[in-house]
Length: 211
Image 1 (tube, helix red, strand yellow):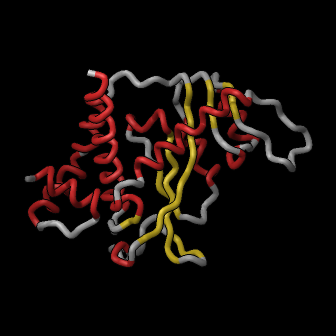
Image 2: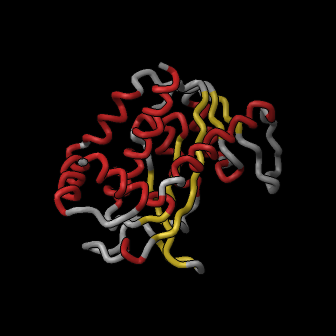
């Protein structure tokens, strides 16, 4: 019954019982969801590090958090928030949430810091000198198409770049749950916990197929 309540909260975005909500918040604050996710995957593959960002709409109920709205901004279409997602780091609790109007590349440096990978795959939004230099310093080959306004165009492996669709697939699977496709949580920590719960279900399904 307990996990059924968590499932309904994240998957369906429905209002849950107070007892279930209290348990959800306690486990969130103690890092239980994060630890469960780490247990499922103990040997992540960092040959490719693929990063990207996605937007989601914010439900009116998500506004009005104590101290002001958290990681959301107003656009022509209403309130939005953005999460930047590293496909191969989803097992390492590395979700970054920003306002929807913030540039994708602004969080990339923190996102890839300390990661030992062979290749960094990203789209043109991440084609900055700072990101390329950081990736090179960390021993990664940047597979990022150059922006058209670059004075000196940079070559990249177009064949390997095709693998970037994996991060798009990750967003697709994440947003199949209503509670993530549309933000209902007032606190960013609760939204992060919802993403972690979704990842737990995804990895459990993967491991069940491979067993």
